[in-house]
Each structure stands twice: as structure tokens, then as C-alpha cells.
Image 1 (cartoon, one colour):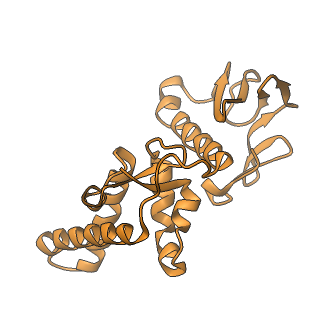
Image 2 (cartoon, rainbow, N blue to C red; image 1 turned 135 degrees about the vertical axis):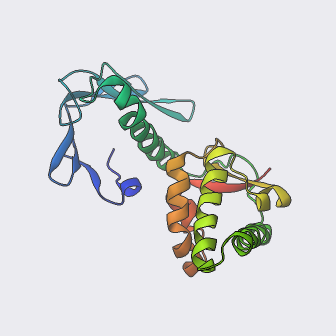
Length: 212
């Protein structure tokens, strides 16, 4: 529970407490270790209505899972389900994928050249849409269309038009569909990946591009 990459350092875990700057979001007690799992009792914090419940990480056959039991959020149940719960799921999943790592790969990684061709198809498609529908500030339009297009494709199916044409798909490192958190992280890191000529966006988002 010590990484903070998914929030770019805004949320940190230290001294058994989840912090947002000076705010204590959740306070945990000493971990309880059992067969193949570790549980942290929830003892308070701004996000908890009262002490109680456990956050548990379990390992079975090389697979990591997390669950929260008995937790009482400060928010009303419906609002919690629509907001805080989604963030919890996304960030915890991201942490577990980082812990898992890339080995073993879920399937055969896509060829670098074919990845480049797929990206070229997608960029051309976004540029064509901007050319047709945007009369001014076409560069801004291309960037906006490309961001929305890629986020939607990655978070829903993992496949863009270019990916479909080249027979490849973006997946989480465990082979499952990327989450919205992963799609956003991947998009934010794309410019750096282009500058460094390295798949930094996949490293940060815990994603990979595999043959489909």
C-alpha cells in the first residue's frame, strides 16, 4: 500500500494512514496476517463514518485480490457508490497490477512496427474527423478528438480502429480489460512516451499491447 503513482503523489500511504496533503482520509490499525492474506483494520479518517471494517489483500495461485468488509463510509450510500467506491476500485486495482508486474505476459506482445502503424491509422482518423467538423483551431480539435476517442476505446474494449486493423488490443498486464483509471494514466503519459521513444505510458498504466 505504499505507492502513490496513480494519484501523482497527491494521495500517499504512510504511518498506517492514507493522506491527501494534510488530511487523513483513512486510518488503519496494525495488519493482521493470515494464510495467503493480510488485513488492515479501519480505525477512522475523514472517509469513514465510524471505526470498523477491514481492507484485505489476498494472494491465490499468483493472483492478487482485494476486498473491503464492514466499512462504513461518511458519504450517503448511493453517493458513495457513484463516487468514492469507483475511485477505490480503480486505485486499488492499479496498485495490485503494479505489484503483479508484466511477467508472465497474458499473450504475445504486439510488434513495435505494427503498433506504430496502428497509431498512424488512429491519428489519421482523428485528423480526418477534425478536418470535416472543425472549421477553426483544428489542431486543438484533433487533440480533443484523439483524447476522447482513445479514452473511450481503451476503457470499453481496449481496441481502437487502428488496433482492430493491425490485430492488436490494449489490455491490463493481467490480460483483463483496462479500467478508466488506466486509460487516463496511459493518455496522460503518451507525450512523455513519444519524447522518450519508450512505452512509458504502458509502464505507468500497467497496460500492454498484445496480439488479438
